[in-house]
Image 1 (cartoon, rainbow, N blue to C red):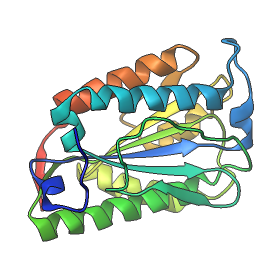
Image 2: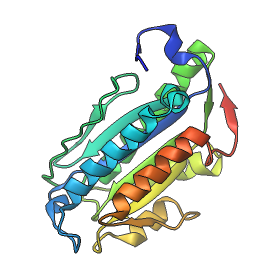
Image 3: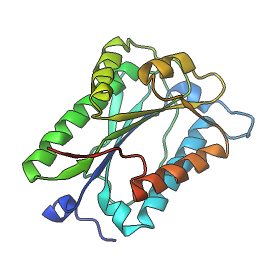
Image 4: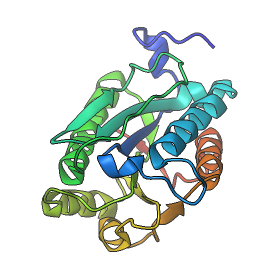
Length: 214
């Protein structure tokens, strides 16, 4: 499939907005019982997700992808909507702290801004997904982010998937971010399985409760 994000063709059909919040803090360099570091697993899993999406033309046309990484002092908008060019290689590097709260706030801004774009183009879209993948505790305040996402989830305007990486992940914090969903634990080879499942869900829209029209 040829990608042309600057044309109106990008907004044809119903979109599935997906935001990945990827923990790339220093602790992600740790090696679990699989013998592979968490950051290497993350790279492999994310590549698996993109490759699976590309195998399905309808899924790749529907996917509206954004990626936010958080490590160091501040989160980074690694990939904004419409910037994915069809590549599948990822090379995330583990370093720094875990500014999870600011990363979630950035994701909230991304969601709100994207809805305005959909409105401008008259685009239907499925409930946005935010996939938070982390192996540690936040090094900043997450109270504001919790309130923002509680409001969105209560109004069924987003689905937040908390994914715990490694044995030391703070499950309690992840449960607070989405009390209605038990945090998923992903380790070793399960990483690739998780991303395969997620990509199939995008293809089949299995996890969307209803379609939203701006």
